[in-house]
Image 1 (spheres, rainbow, N blue to C red):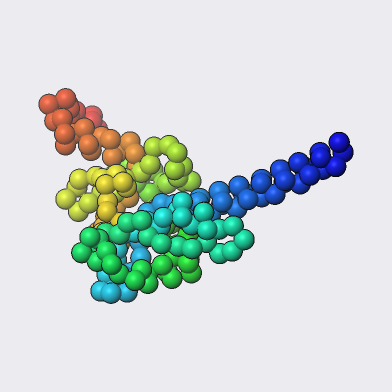
Image 2: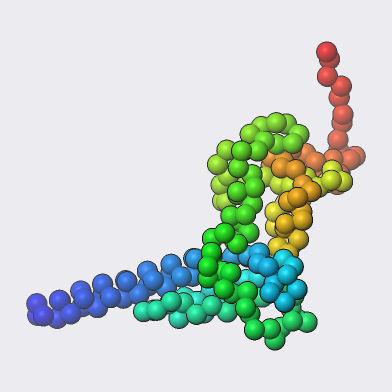
Amino acid sequence: MPIQILVVAILGVLAAGAVWRLGRAWIKYRGERVITCPDNRQQAGVRVDAWHAAETALGKTPELRLSSCSRWPEMAGCGQMCLSQIEASPEDCLVRNILLKWYEGKACAWCGHPFGTISLAGSKPALLRPDNVSVEWSRVPADKLGETLLAALPICFACHMANTIVREHPELVVERKRAL
């Protein structure tokens, strides 16, 4: 009986280690990324097949392949040479990390409130385009992220919501002048 318990315990530890390695690979390679396409030297938005990376992660370096690219379907048969950029720096090309770095040390362009630590689970700040329309992060295509960030200003969630309500429902807005 003690041998059986030992075998089950060893198998449990091995299984937990395998699940841990698979989970780490999946977490590491999920999410949208911005890369420079080797074909035309332009930014492209890509997604790594995180499930495939996780499945191939046991005992070796995960095998990466794309599940989507902003240049597809016209370039769907490419050699996916851009994967070397993701392998070299998986965190730096992740859209959410690019945005988090962009907000560091900045304050809202409207109310002046500084951005502290931004929670990815809560209300996220937005981007104020040059036409004074605010947009959520998720509405900016990854392949346009670089040029959007060059032209945009940071705006907090509260100011983004106010901008959206004024723009989409002006009949609900009452402007009042402040007494000086």
